[in-house]
Amino acid sequence: MAKLELGRYSFSFGDKFLYSPCDNCETTLKCSEFFALEVGRFVEYDVSEEEVALGWPAINRAYQWKERIAESYIDLAGDKVHRIARFRRTLDSQPWKLDLSQYD
Image (tube, rainbow, N blue to C red; front, top):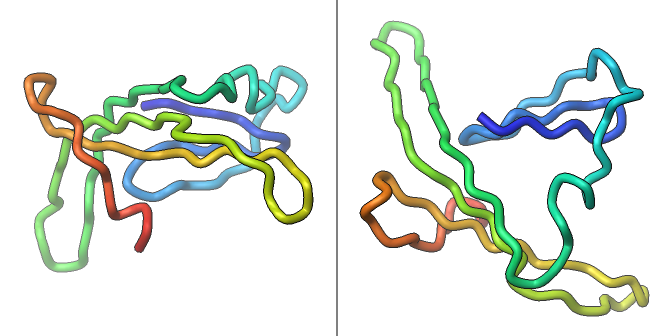
């Protein structure tokens, strides 16, 4: 599971993001050190997810995420921003498919 610490919080990547204060904020990576902001760059994650509901057995899922810098542009405030596209697949042998759950 990938873990990125930004400022005083760490983000654990799963189906949803979880937030918790970091233990040692002095060794925290800057976002640009973790994920270079250049169009075409990507990071792949192996995700293990466990869904738990009262009265039901836990459901375990495993899949891969790929986050890619799809484009960069200047927004209305004049700042450079980057659009990140997320893709998902279950097996290495499968093609990547756009993960539309990011738009929920």
